[in-house]
Image (cartoon, rainbow, N blue to C red; front, side):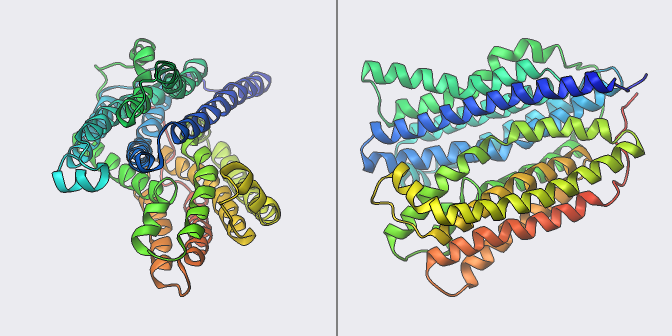
Length: 426
């Protein structure tokens, strides 16, 4: 079966894919900002602290489950090369994600932990459980769709998630029925958007196709999920990491840094769809030696370009960053230019890092994904503990240094020859 595509058709398809996905991501990011700011405005500060803890847990759990999307996009793309569909291994991978989400969420019902996190509001832990299980199904659905190049349905699902949250939030606002629990339900409801696309996704699945057994699936997904949890620690969970390893300091300065961090990191939480699009692209290129050579060249050039962009962004951030933070967050949020520069450098480099780890996922090199993020999180943690100086200084230096080292590590992994080319299964 030939896998060649006419150049003009491929280029037009690439432009259509990029336009559709790019538009959906822009809408998703915009709706995400609206939801974040709206919840901050609707709740008093003492309640917003609890809500923000819930938000961090449910979104962090979603980030930790995101490898499901990439793994199922890989399985679906490999099957498509042979003219088939993803099989039982896809369902097994989703089952692993569901079990992990449920196990994590149930620990939040432990009374001492629930009291510390949610001030005894046990219903928030139940909502995290429901949202986490739904996230596993949602990422599985998205992976099947993009693996078979169903870009329109995939893009609609990416938008549907935040749109459902915004719709429910609007109803709560109009009816003046909002509180911590109802807003938490609105957030979790978005992860059930996959139900709208369950039928087309089911058509891309053949449960009669055997493949990797439970042992292989559990080991691979276990490594990918741990790697994603480490990723979340330096993206959505970095404030908690700083608070744990570098407590104290000027609370106003630390708060200003975190305000800038939340603003800058939100787009990174939506890089998952781009990663999932990258996995089938890598699978298709890796069929031939010429494709593998082209892929290595694109990756090397992209990494070099990202370093240049990060340097430029850091300079702009140092100049305009403090003003931008005060404009968005308020005049009480005062931050140094060099802190914004480090934050921008870090945020830019985390984008190619996540795309390069998608290459390793396409090659089924889950161990290397785990090693990459262990290097990043380990470096940040050690620097937070061992560096001299006050917490903001340590946080910014660790924030900038960790992804720089991580980019070098993952680039070395992907530029070497893949141990085995990706082949469609008969």
